[in-house]
Image 1 (cartoon, helix red, strand yellow):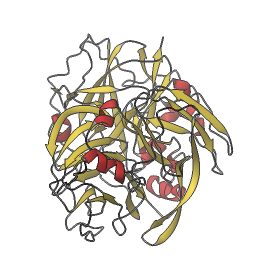
Image 2 (cartoon, rainbow, N blue to C red; image 1 turned 135 degrees about the horizontal axis):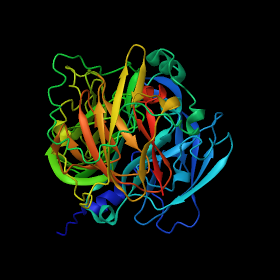
Image 3 (cartoon, rainbow, N blue to C red; image 1 turned 180 degrees about the vertical axis):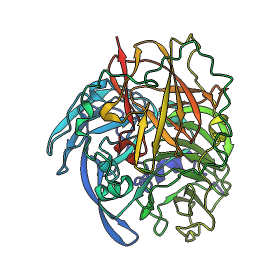
Length: 494
């Protein structure tokens, strides 16, 4: 008797339609016309309640974009909202004019306006979001996945898990409550030139100073860390809660590449694969030396690529646990016929704080590190702020009085982030990829990233090669911190 065993690749092709809601529609290799993307409203069912939120809708009606190897980012973005907006392509390195920051240099898109983008994209797991904080808090964000030839050839299924924190209250109201009314909601003045003044700490050029002997560990002894500013109404994975999670068809015993994006406004998560053995293979879209485990943490705006080898048939929840709390969300990977059990939205115990000792970051090693070369410029960047009044600063300044961090195009630059506050800060630099090279005084061959989490009282140094001569944003990706001014610019001159 002849029996036919379907190959894993055949299974993946057969199940592609079933998984379309998770893996946003892929665009054809032979792209001729630009892809269309619309900033628009949409309605979600969250815990049985209808919620009108924002989104970035593609031509197929799904959220976000998946590009094939070698495909250009040729996109026509239309603003279908009743407010002005602008979209940042997080993790991409477009020309500065296409970076998507209000008035730096392009203005916000007016209602009904269309704007075209065209650049060669960075491969990996990335995302796109409004650069107006209240809009990002209203879920104006979506996946942006750029696949490699290796991804296409690999014998594995790709799954995206996109995380949000959500409130039924208007984002303006939530932000005002968190910040005590200190936030600038529209950030329309973002593009104004920086003042020329200096203060004692800002712009400190530390070239030639040896910081390697500094031990910042233990600096938090006896001090209380502030974790979560706000209890959101729901925590979402692919727009759903655990009361009605997305169940993704998988092959028994198959291999999964799980692409996780933390698009939350103010929540760090632990990603827990439970009974399924896993390994972390990339962060922020950049390959690392594979790190085995079943639980990996991520701050706001960071991404994790996790390879999972399913141990057989069954249902395998992948949970996102809110740091310092019991709330959880997630998706379920289920083989054909598997019993899918209900999972509570509240865990039995609180998840720990995320990476306060940087133990996870210390274990990450870039698969393709920066080429070794002499450092031309080193600069310390002081992160500070307080809960009362709710104001967060870089080098003692908010955006209104910010002092640029400067470099010359082509220079090897080291930026040392020194967090003197009791909240962690996910620091994101536009237009550049950097390597983590020192953590609390310890030299490392760390991960390549675009967003680095700096815990309270910690010190992290990143190295980069200064790119296009332009004004690039450098800011905390905790939306209430950004809204109260925790932003400066990386001003690159020719």
